[in-house]
Image (cartoon, rainbow, N blue to C red; front, side, top):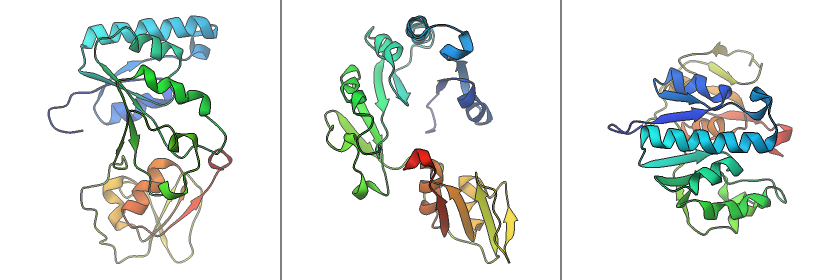
Length: 212
């Protein structure tokens, strides 16, 4: 994060570990399943929880990653800080269009850049009102460099090896260490795709069913 910017991360249990490891302040937002409640009760809970946190921390802006469910849009309707939607591109063709109208609940929409934008066939290509495209969001250094002379191999999220190459892990698995990776195999998620290509690491990407 830029110096002088203090962030509070509000997330479910799956999203808290990375925020904790980065030294960020976190607030837990349980799912309906975690609470054992119906969808309607969870919507009200999310709305009230986000409104409370907004009053508690008085942020200048709230950035919503993922899908803006009813509880989120109801909290945004209460006013206060600027509510922004970090809306991904590259949706599967014919899916997700029901979320298009949710953009009007926000003061603006930020769209992370995509190296494969030319092949985007999803609904976001036609829903551009209030959208600002930003550079791909990664942890890469500003000027990533290639510096390896060794046959090093990185496997991200996949159990794999490469004959003749030495399998490596942390710290090379982090974005800052990718300059020391000679070759890699990775799941084709947003972070893996953009960090490995951005660091110019020759990579084989595995496309799961969720990405097809």
